[in-house]
Amino acid sequence: MGEHIARSNFDERERMVFVQHLIDDIKALETMIKERMIESDVVRIGAEQEMCLINSDYRPAAKSLEIIKAIDDPHFTTELASYNMEANLDPVQLGNECFRSMQDQLESLLKKARNKAEEHNTRILLTGILPTISRDELRMEFMTPIPRYYKLNDILKAWRGDDFSVRIKGADELSLHHDSVLFEACNTSFQLHLQIPQDDFIKSYNWAQAISGPVLGTACNSPLLLGKELWRETRIALFQQSLDTRKWTKAVKEQVARVGFGERWQIASPVEIFKQDISTHRILLTKPIERSSLDVLREGKIPKLEALSLFNGTVYRWNRPCYGVGNGKPHLRIENRYIPSGPTVIDEIANFAFWVGLMVGRPKKYDDLPCIMDFREAKVNFLRAAQNGRQAMFSWMGRAMTVKKLVREELLPIAYEGLRKFQVNESDIVELLGIIDERVGKGTGADWQINNFRSLRKQIKLDSAIVQLTKAMYHNQLTNVPVYQWKNIEGMDKTMEAFHWVGQIMSTKLMKLYEDDYANLAIAIMQWNNIHHLPVENGKGELVGLLTWSHIEKLGRMDMHEVRVSDIMINEVISVEPKTEIEVAKKMMADHQIGCLPVCVDTHIVGIISKVDL
Image (cartoon, rainbow, N blue to C red; front, side):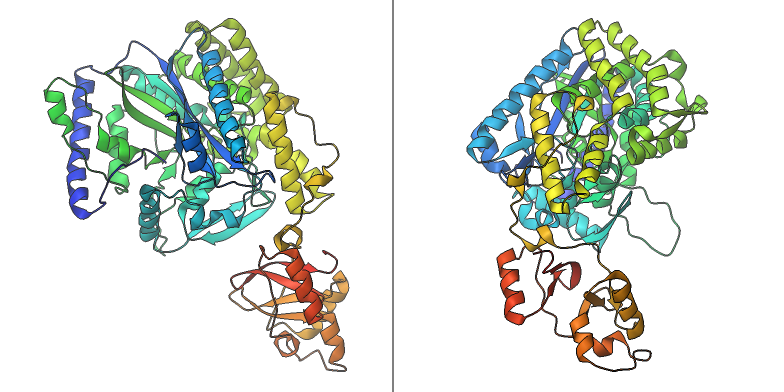
């Protein structure tokens, strides 16, 4: 979520000064590009590893601040949620053993993190979305207690003027409202950085956009959210919707999302991309800045462009242009933000090598993409990849192609050529790109999760299934065997069947009645489906009653053709919450001599627990 702000008032005076610094930063960058000050004689790569913290039950563990303090290494930093954290890898020059070096450092940092996490009864998991994350961990108390995060949440909520909405449809459908930006915290990624020469930046940026779909299609690892099977890479939809501040009106009007793929090919200087974003999106965060970048530049020094960097960190392009300073020299780079975390380190490094190889191996025929490919073609390919993964069908330069055909026949040869051009070790090239070749044929992390999730759901309750799945992911990850070689889950660990809360065993596939339904229809539905309890909702979707078979029998001979459900339902409904302890629910059912308990969040029913479930 961008840089840490050590001190800030976030007031109007600071905002006014910040705006001028932002304008000055654009002018300074234009000057540096015009005077050819941008470092262009070397290509470096870098990465950021986001990770999930889980407890011994494979559920989120809100321990990031304690673990980061124990690690005591500047490579580690916080994330929005207290059950996530990030490790920043050192940039290295592209060539020779660069990917081996990246892998070694990443494994070293993860080992350090795992050792300190164990001291806090916590484990580290790399995954795009943690399967066991629940609505409970999306409450404000799980936000990392840093003022910048709270300010970010307050501003986005104020701009939205209403609750945020999430609507994602895959094999299942998720549709709900939420009142904070914490839904963004469900996403964890492996962000890739590639330094680009200034004269090649626009060509490279357009190429990065064009290849996003097929690259994502080979790397999907986020198919599940809140127990729902959604997109192969659900992060793409979730990230955009969880930070969407657009206000919807009855008028049809163009509104650019803060998270997105972009609207068109780029045709001018990289500065124009920053100008587009500043022109399109409001300033979200500010901070005090001591000196104008123009003054620093006049003194013959290199400015950090602090205002531009902070603003750029709050506009979430999937391919984000970045400015930075390293070893006293300014540079431009592209940040790839769509690759998910996991399934293993070797899978991530393979994704890295594939993307970098494609970027630096771009054939000359793709230098002028606006003339040969419609931008919407690239955008639609990206969305298809997010939805369908390696099963997606793409349109590539006017031809319909499967992911497998496009990757194997068109893109892998380009990646091989690109890496060889920079003299990357041949053995590393063959190993890493070989993983991509095998994965596109045999399966991604998303494919493995879905296959095993479906199999588990045929045998056990939802909560048990996602725990068993997460446990298997964790242990497979420790082997560092590429995901296409992972075996399916065989047999279940009965020691993981530790049920504590009602939410773990409740039935969630509910049939419901409405208070104005006719009683004869209600009785027929109960008979057809062999159901003894049916919750009753009003027009707002709120639980207002319960219809039970035993209660109907007590009513005797009534003419059910004219009677409404509201006339015969139980009005005083005893209910519990998902986090109610099972023993408490069992005692409530015994004390009140009832056969079921609706499970509610606020006034809305999310499940029902019966004697059968117990």
